[in-house]
Image 1 (cartoon, rainbow, N blue to C red):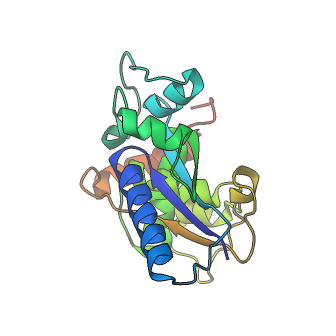
Image 2: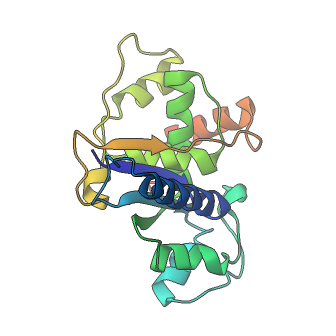
Length: 207
């Protein structure tokens, strides 16, 4: 078994890494068999375009300050990440490997609507981007049908994950934890707006 965590960037990612590091240390000290032993816990840290201060820093190998934030995912809107955040990606603690990726606001909005349609959960873009990273590239028929009819499909939709293209060793025996924890920066009206914009080809360059 391999464990994977999908999270937004910054303090949340740092907290996850700190918790994993502590648990691995406790397991080692107590002699408990670690089912992930010999394999790093893989973390996928996500940002949206227009707020990708971590991605810019990783590319440069040093902290970078954005001139401004254009992403709608304002809870991800840090002009500059903390030094610890950058070091956790470049030099993570033993047993942890971090992959950072950037997605656009339209992709994050798709993730928001997937949770609305399939699970009746309303979250903000900073969380929707985590969902979309896991299921992106799968079937989109379910989302399209919901957008056109306003109804939920009777049968569950199967999504083919693209995590295997990002993280080495991902497979059927992998265990994935998606951190979805923010709902203060969203409303039903905003979700409706996302759906309307996606129906008008938001994110395709043809909007």
